[in-house]
Image 1 (cartoon, rainbow, N blue to C red):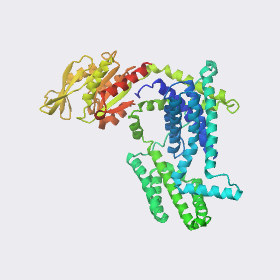
Image 2 (cartoon, helix red, strand yellow; image 1 turned 90 degrees about the vertical axis):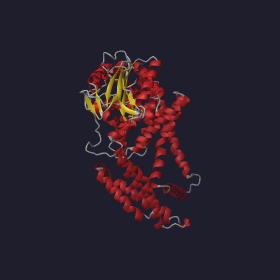
Image 3 (cartoon, rainbow, N blue to C red; image 1 turned 45 degrees about the vertical axis):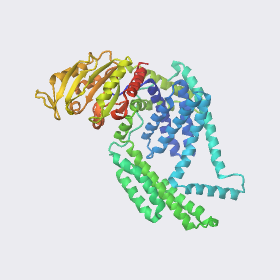
Image 4 (cartoon, rainbow, N blue to C red; image 1 turned 30 degrees about the vertical axis):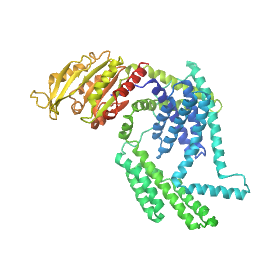
Length: 576
């Protein structure tokens, strides 16, 4: 059974809004990309902003938009596209822009309009940056040369290359403003929609989406290698001749296809290679033979085009490989353990709601004729699904935090200070703490203290002769183990808002020590559980009990006050 942190109200709302946004991105986005629709990025950005604004109007909570963006960005990773970094970054930037403007101007018409206009302009900006990043600064020269040739041949002298970009940005800004106005109206309507008008969520709808190939093997080392090889490849392309750098790129390309079989399908498509060849030829003509006044030759232009194609190949291959490695469960776990524990639980809800949101969108046959009603009805589905999920809150497990560090880094010292801090704030604390016992500067063993009653016993010693559990050089007293398990029993912890366990180690991972108490602890309602875990064992503990920690603190660079603030904030959200 999975045990993870309960979702606070804002994360639950963000999960449903993010799922709705992702369903549009995945379904509509895949369709538009497949038919090569010219302004797909702008359309998807506008729809995303429309939904975010509608959600913000319906659920007036600061922080909702960026959370929904984070969930949508992660869910975008299940898209069939091999390259997911660009769309994920774009979604996250759009959400952050809208969140930032609503923080500055308020969650009102001004904040929404400014944020929506900026966010909807992101696809153009991202496209320009992407082209320059992929093909280098020669892409800008190529663009300027083409515009100059076109305007001269048409006899137009008043249009500059920058004017076309500004016109495209203006169109995007207008579309963004329209999307925001529609979203504001739809959010207000969804908030007042009668219950019998809103469709009921159908929990039996099967999921329409798969997950990455389960046979794919991941490597954090390879992720680092890909990240480092990209700038190294750029350096090789810029400093070596194309004939010298091309074999290096070819070797890297072949290695990636061997390591990631799923990428082969993408590179079998002729369109990608036609694009690269077209850029090379166009650069040869425009930057070479047609610009004799700059002293350039057609051969020189072809060399520039070949460099651009090599650079593009490197970028596409490297980002494709990085996109695969970012799906590594250990990489995702690493991010989750650093303050984004709620994201894990929110994603579970979002993926569960995804087919429901997709079905709700598919049922709106009159979207073009009645956009306000259609969007409001889809949002009402999210509201009904949230009401259903809120009825399940009594079955939610506790919020879990982890305090980590290696031996001697002060884990217990921070925990003792935290216990005092929580008591001073009137928060009932229970559990166990195991202070170290030193003799002449040598660690001789540990005691165990019941945090609630402050009773204390000898837990283990290196020179003990009792028949007990042995772990390393320490021998644990059976009566002390029984004492600790009693201190962690549900009846003894009744009324405690925070439960501390010092510590969870190899003994517990093997099913001994405090291991047998973990299942009951992770079912305690409306409280926080703080586990003290050696840094090298955090991943093992998370995997052993399927924990989704809200935060992982390192003892050497954190304070009891900051930990207490975070725990108190979480308790307030759970209670609320």
